[in-house]
Image (cartoon, rainbow, N blue to C red; front, side):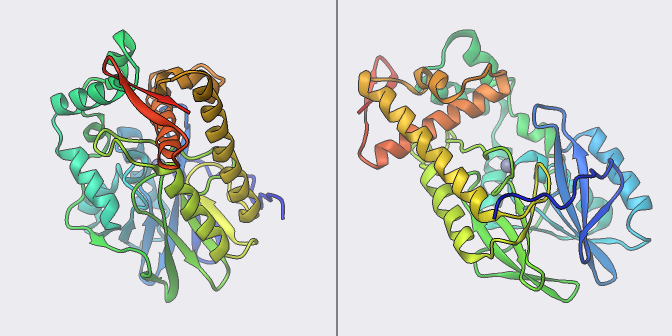
Length: 339
Ligand SMILES: [Zn+2]
């Protein structure tokens, strides 16, 4: 089945919009190229469960104030589920936890990485990114800009939540008497929670399956040899094979849609094409991750996008290296990959 979008009216900030029995769509603006995030509010007995929380900035707090005061029918928020560690998903979880005295639920993999990033000082964060991206060919002023002014994560995850409840593969959550099965996504983040309700085939997919953009696959300085491309493709195809094609997918960005099989096939094909493009480039001469950017991205990249693009370029090179299709050599402190 080709992609179908059953809802085209967007909920305005501070209002909720019903998309399935007991499931409401909330939409928060974001102050960067990715201009919004979708959160999902679920009826849960005498209270509400929310999935994802928005970026930890003042504008999100204002929207949450409105929602908590006007949109919850006088019932409390009783559970906060965070699909993965990225600040637009995790950012307001600590604030909501304190305000509503509600537990935060996430996976061990997401919690571990969030905690590690949060613990790093500004200096450690800058030097880690500089050394890592420098070893992949980024240099000069651009490297200084991309490595940033310190630990940006801590500025938009305010505060980190405390004592989370950790769930993982094989677990499920009972929400309003219904079972939501956990499916784990990998590659975009370590152990991304997706929640599936079988009774009416609804999947809260977070950033694991998006309708119009491909989720960023980024190698981080703390795991420089990681291969998120294979992890992403394998976990996506497992999800595709586990769930019906007419599942209503509720993504964190873009519109709710049906047609998961064709969307996942397109995403897998996109990464396979990128691998071939990168491999071709490495056949003509040894190339660094920075050299590869123009063949992978045919648009101008701002500083934030450049960071994601470098991570994605390294991800595809690491994948080819793991497949034995390229070899890596150190040329004056910069990794070069040759087919
Ligand atoms: Zn994300």
